[in-house]
Every structure is written in C-alpha cells, then in structure tokens.
View 1 (cartoon, rainbow, N blue to C red):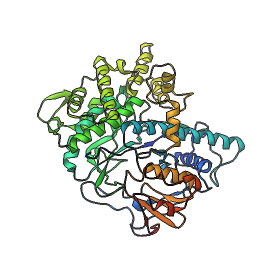
View 2: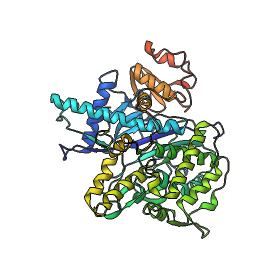
View 3: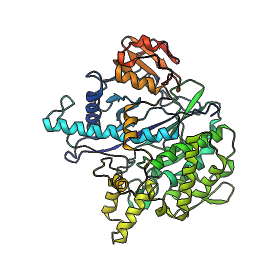
View 4: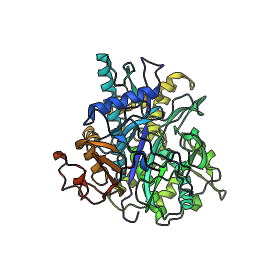
Length: 507
C-alpha cells in the first residue's frame, strides 16, 4: 500500500467436542463456552451485544448487494447460537454457526497478525477451564440447560463427516485497485501457497473417504474460482465486500487458507499475501502465471506431498507450486524490518522444501504432520488405519497437555516465533497501531452496551470509528481509561465521531 499500513485481521472457527456428552449440540456447547468466558471477564453480568448495523455480508465486490434484512437485529449476547464476548485485546469471541470463533484485532504487520492469531487459543483454553469449574459445582451458565461437561477445542478445518469450517484472513487494500486484476493475480498464488501454509490432512475427499495424506485441509471444499459464499460453493477468491472502514478501502476476505498451529506457517500466510497485494497495487503483472484449471489444481497440489505435481498454465507451460511461488518471490519486495523477516523466512522454507517435506517438519504444520504419519506407517500401520486420523486430530488439539503439536514444541522439534509471555500479552493487550487499541481499552474499562468493528455504544452515546488506523495508542494518550471516562471523553480523539444509535433503524 502507498502508505505502508496494510491492515490485517484473522477469524478462526474452532472444532468443538464434548467427550462426555456426545449428543450435545455443538451450537449449545459453543454457547456455553462463550458465555462462560463473557461472565468471567466482562465488567457487568451481561456482555456487550454485537452491533449489526454495519454488517453487509452479502455485498459483493463485483458491484451488487443481496441484502439479508431491512432492519438491524438487536440480539441478546448470551442467546443460544449467537453468544458474543468482546475481548480486552480488541478482538471478539463468539458463536458462528456451530463453532466458537475468535476474531483477532486489526494489526498492521504480518508478525503481529501471527502473534494475535496464535493468542486466540488462550481464550478457548480459558473457556474450557471455566466450564470445568461450573461442572464441578453443578451449575450451568445457560438458563434452562444442564452444565456443559468437558469441552475440547481443535484448531482445524474439517470434522471428518463432510463439513468444513473456516480460518479466514482479511487484508485492506485500496478500492481503486481493479477487482478483476486483483483476482487474476491472486488465484495462482492461492493455489500454490498451500505448500507453505497447509495444515495437512489424513484422508482425501470432503468426508476423507479415500485414504492418503494431503497438504491442505480446505482443498476438497473449493468449488469455484470466484464466489460470494463462505459455507457452500466456496471460491478461490471470495467477493464479500464488507470493508468495516471508509470507502477508500476494500477488504480482501480470504477463505481458502487453513487454520495453523505453526507460527512459521502463520507468519508466511499473512506476510506472503500482504507482500503480493503490495505488488498488485503497485502494478506488478502476474498474468503469465494464469492457471488453465485453477479449481482442479487446488486438489492437484494438495494431493501431492512430494511437491512434484506440475500445474498447467494458460499458455500451456507447466510449473510446480514451488516454481510458481518462486516467481511471486522474485516480484515482491520488503519495505521494513518485519517484511524482510517474512522474505527471509520464505527463502528458508523454500530451501528446506527443495530437500523434501521432512526437511521442513520443524517449520510447517503439514510437514510435521506428514512426518508423524510416515513414522507410524513405517511401523506397519496401514494407510487407512483410524490411528492416522487420530494423529491428524491430536496434532491440532489446543490443549498443551494433549496436543501433538505442543509435544513437538516441548521436544524442540517445532520452531516457535513467540514466547508464552508474548502470546499472553497479545491476549491481554490490544495492538498499538490500529483502532483496536481504543476498542480493547473501552471494553476493559468502560460500560460498553454494544460494539462492532466500527462502533461503540457507551451509555446513551454511540460513536463511530471509521478509520482502521485511528484512534491508535498514540491518539489515545490523553485518555485515562482507568478513570473510567464516559463516551464524551472519546469524542476529542482523532477518528471518533458521535452518531445516532441505529439499533432498530433501516439497514
């Protein structure tokens, strides 16, 4: 971006299981988790409700809008299936469909994007611990419901029964960038980048009905090149045009990525994509990388962990995914220390993968999982043995005591980029460089009735924060949040304006 401040955000839907209550609806168990966290960490007994007035999930980047409703709903933040908790780090923890979801706060670097993404696990672990305490006392956080038993969370994208859930990425970009050019430049990149950021999966096909190992968890669920949908008919490029900021910027909503445990995979996911967006906005041409059958090549790449699969380009030439990424690498450039860190990591991983996936097992999720699976198969375990699927699941268990990923970390077989203290800080403090700073501190110290990415309602005053970058920590230096100011104290800060509450107004 021209101002060098691309804003990045992440949304992760976690898998959820209740081992002692297998018949319990995941919608109900997810609600238990969110409400338990909200009751323990919000200033009042009722969490701030989510303000839907700025939501437009059916607005399409191609120029049309399929409006979902004409009035803006006002929803109980403790209600089944829609529970909501605003977080002190500026993010959000809520129920989305049948999953607990963590939305990280807005940040301005791939390093911070990875750190705040990884910190999301801490909120889920805290919710699990709270539910265990409630169960021990025989109490339930939900009226009319029995206590929720043990809850386990998995940072993955498939349930093994045909369903897939998302790990979505968000990137701001200048609205003047032609969308057709953006999509055409990104499609080959998204098809190829799974060899760096894939989470690995045992089984092929939506239900894992065919034996075998593949690189990506999402590959079997991508059905179109371009689509507005996120739960069916998913596209390599998602066209949702819901910027949550001023009209100068649009938001690229990426749904093709996997949920990662590896810090290196996270850094590359956000960093590589941001650098490619920089190049696109600067007019760099990637048309020579156009793929003849991009949807088919998503699984073509994913199904070949040897990395030898050759993709046919529109001009008839063929390249491997690594060779396609090499071209992107040659055409992007760093402008600061964090971006150089991304490029250095890109080069290191590329060099390791040149030797084969096992050489990157200490860096990437899919390579680590592939190494574990190969070790079991070397002992005589068959390719279709359920034990391999269990390895797949246990790897992404976020409980450090049960997780194979965390076991690798403890045994120094997986590299981390952030210390436990740095992750705890990210869970407790909002990023300093974006408007999330004010949101996080307001939620922690003020009586917020409603909130969204753009709005805060405190008492009878609703304020709008349209800019992604303001008010940041520097803008808020004059506010003593510990003194619990009212909304009026926020109005003198850059980027904050008072508006009429629109809880039941027209959308």
